[in-house]
Image (cartoon, rainbow, N blue to C red; front, side, top):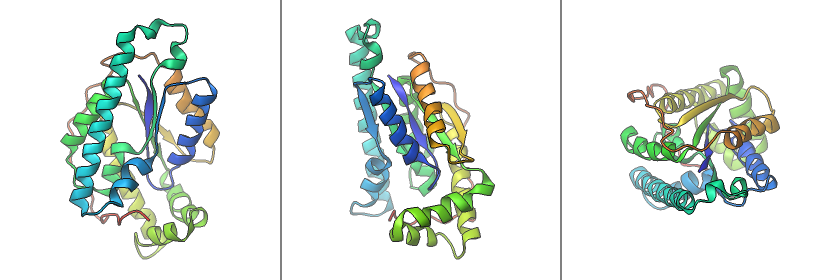
Length: 244
C-alpha cells in the first residue's frame, strides 16, 4: 500500500491539497484509490448525537474499522502476486486521507495517545506517510482566521470567532492547537513529512505530496520507532467547539 494522511489546523490547506492529490492520482492512472475527506472522520462524528466522549468513541471505532479494511486490502494485494505485474502502478492500493486521527489533538477529544498510537503503528506498517501542513506563526492570523472568514461563509465565521475575543487571541488559540498537533506527530510511528505552507502554492504542495506517494517503494514494516509520547500542553487553549 502507498499513500498519506494530511494533517493540519483550520485553514492550513488540507482540503486544497487533498483534492489536488486525489485528482492527480486519478489522472496518473491510479485505479485503486481510497480517498477519505476530513468530513468522514471529524464532521460525521461530531454531528452525531451524544457528548464529546461519545464522539471520541465513535471516531476511534471508525478508525479501527478503516485501518482493518486497509490492512485486509493490502494483504490481499500482496498475496495476489500483483506487486510484480506490469500494471502494478495502477492497481496498487493507494490512500489519500485528510485529518483522520490527527484531528484528535487539534480538537482535544478525550482519546488517549496510546489508543491512537496503536492505530498509527498499523498505518505505518501499511506504508502510509503522515504529511503535516505547518502554518508559520506570522501567517496564522491571515491564513487561518481572516482568510477562513472571507472564503468559508457565515457559519465558519461564527465558528472561528468563538475561539476568542479578537483576532490576535484567535490566532494564538490556533497556534496552541498546531503545537499540540506537532507534538503528537513527532511521537507517531508513521513516516513524517512537514510542509511549511508559507504561501498559496497549492499545486506545488500537491506535487510534493505526489512525489512522496509515487516515488517511495512500498516496503512492509516501514515504521520507525516513535519517541515516548508526552502530554501536550494545552494551557491557554480551550476546547474547540463543535464544527460549524
